[in-house]
Image (cartoon, rainbow, N blue to C red; front, side):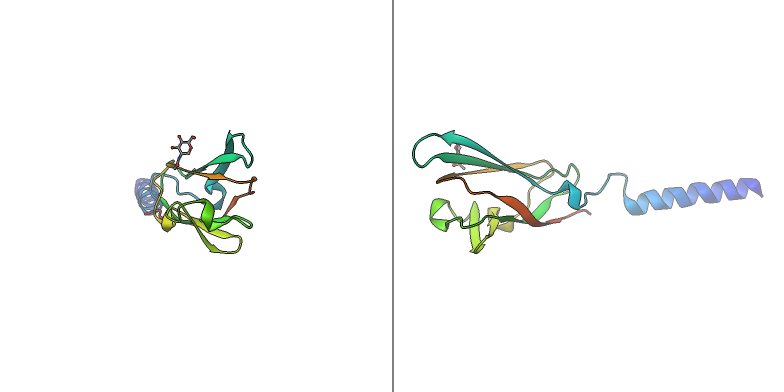
Length: 123
Ligand SMILES: *[C@@H]1O[C@H](CO)[C@@H](O)[C@H](O)[C@H]1NC(C)=O
C-alpha cells in the first residue's frame, strides 16, 4: 500500500514536471532591458541603444518601448518604428532569441526609453 502511494507520488511529480517543463519560463519580471550609451559627443550627441531579451529560455516578440517624442526621421523604421506618440516597436515586432541583443543608434538629445509591452513565446 505504501509502495503504491510512493509510486503515485513519483508519477504525479513527473507529470507535473512534464507539464510545466524542466526549463523555467519567464514572467514580466524578466522583461527586456534597454541601455543607452553615448557614442558621439557632437551637438547633438549620438546614442547607441541596446535592447536585450533577458529571458534565458524563451524568445520574445512585439517589444514596445515608451519612447516619448522620438522622431521616426532619426532611425530606420525596421529597427525602431514609431507607432504612435510615445509608442515605438523594435525590429518590426519580430522575435529575439533568448538573451539576444539588438542595437540601434540615433543622433539627438537623449530620449528616455523603457520597455512597455512584450510577449514571451514559451513553448
Ligand atoms: C551603432 O553605432 C556603433 C558605434 O558607433 C556601430 O558600431 C554600429 O554598427 C551602429 N549600429 C547600427 C545598427 O547602425
